[in-house]
Image (cartoon, rainbow, N blue to C red; front, side, top):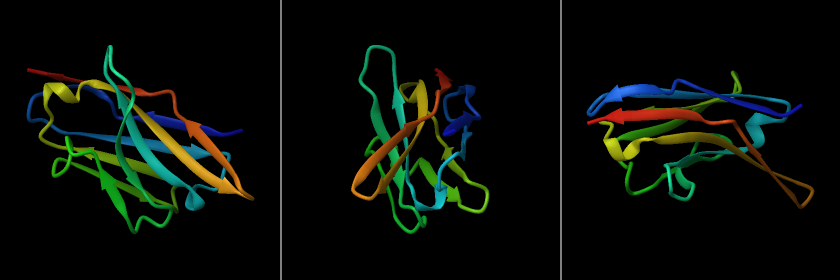
Length: 120
């Protein structure tokens, strides 16, 4: 059974930090591209950051570059998002996403989300 479980969300003041985790089970984590998305109230879900299966390459939304850092530990089947210098506009539900390509079939898995609220 595929499971992606996010944790680490919460309420923080502007300028503060949070570290999100995504613990994965039920599929081969080390062969999966992993992403963090977020969705604010009334807005579409947006890609925040992504990391390749070996962790060798990352990408970020312009709005979080220099403030957020994505990483993964393939030995622990876990992905992280270190969020620093948080702003009220970072308030959203953050979702963990996994993408796998197996025999030409693309599989897309999602976590349940974790709420991040940044107070002004």
